[in-house]
Structures are given as C-alpha cells and as structure tokens.
Amino acid sequence: MKSAWSKLHLTLKIGLLLFIFGVGPLLILLLLDALHLVEARNAVGFGILAFVSLYPSLILILIGGILTFRKRRKAKLLS
Image (cartoon, rainbow, N blue to C red):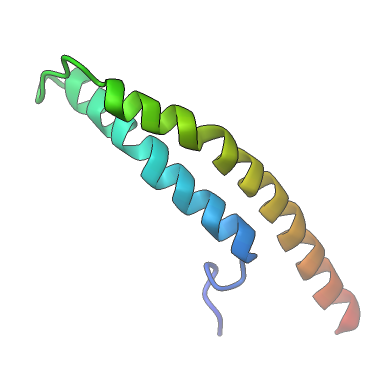
C-alpha cells in the first residue's frame, strides 16, 4: 500500500517543501518571539526568504493539486 506522500504529484511535493522551508523559519521565529522564548529583533533575512518563496510555492501547490486530482480521477476511470 502506497503512502499518502507517494500518491501526490511531483509539482505538489515541490510546492509543499518550498512553502515549509521558505515560510517555516519566519513562522517559527514569530512563534518563539510571541512565547517570549527568543527576542526577534531583526527578522529581515527570514522575511525576505518568505517573500521570495511564498508566491512560487502557492502557484506550485495549486498546479500540483490540480494535476494530482486529474491523475486520481484518471486512475479511477481506468479501474
């Protein structure tokens, strides 16, 4: 039995990983700052990383979601 990750289209996988590794550090830093565990004085680097990676990752997730849906629908029709 295949895992859920292996059933996804490659474009969707790349988009999800780009979103996690591009926006994730900024979100983690903001969360830690809100919990007063870390003092985030200057998050410009993480902000630029999130800015550069957010829109391409959302586009890839959208396209990959459509391609995954089409692939699953085609597999259902053939079986």
